[in-house]
Image (cartoon, rainbow, N blue to C red):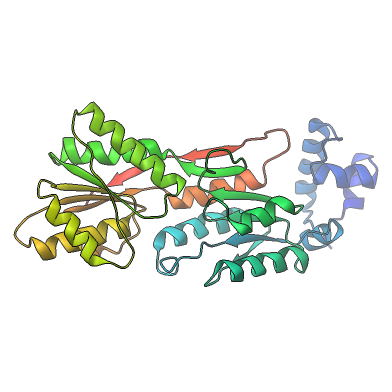
Length: 321
């Protein structure tokens, strides 16, 4: 027969309520008592009933993981890495993940609203951080905890996990110029102006200034290759690209090779999210360590009240093709 809270209380000469509070890390119980209770519980083989505990607290034994509305999500291994890290940490806490995904913001919003009101989910991890996002507005107005992967825009404040994207942008630019001897790298961004893009561009601009080179920034449209072709033709000096992500970098790289099949160009993208068969030795990517980002997001979401961390910054590394 498995040990119960009453068994622990009897062995230690404590009340059942004190043992229950200690096992649930109630701050009213001293740290020493909490540790002693947990040691005895482990020695007795006590297994907590997480479903019952969370039902009492009117909280589901789940964490909502919210995906961005983006047609690249399904086949992007960056998100797979995030989910692996999240799931690892949730398993250790006897929680499971529930996914919110949709083809539109309205679909995702309704999914999350149902998670809160019907499924009693009280903790969420958003795999993005957007300005004026209705899902984030909903979470801020509800009695829930949430963490975003990506820092908030200026003037906003919530828990987040991120990389140092200014340094990541600078590292990618330095790698092109110093390791690959690129003389005129351009910066290719999307049209979204998301916080991480702004930071990576800031790093690029800083390195170009330090190298006393003129920066060139180009916004790559989603569905207009003619604009990309025009940019390439108008910038014959470009011999390298710092792209805000791998997909943007791959688009520019492919257009360049179609227009100039006899010329080489070096590209640095971000997320290390492309299968090897789509790239070659001239395409490089900054690995943002998504597994660790996922683990860090859960740690932040479940941190003890005594820690009160507002964010965790995860390191990055350039993957050489």
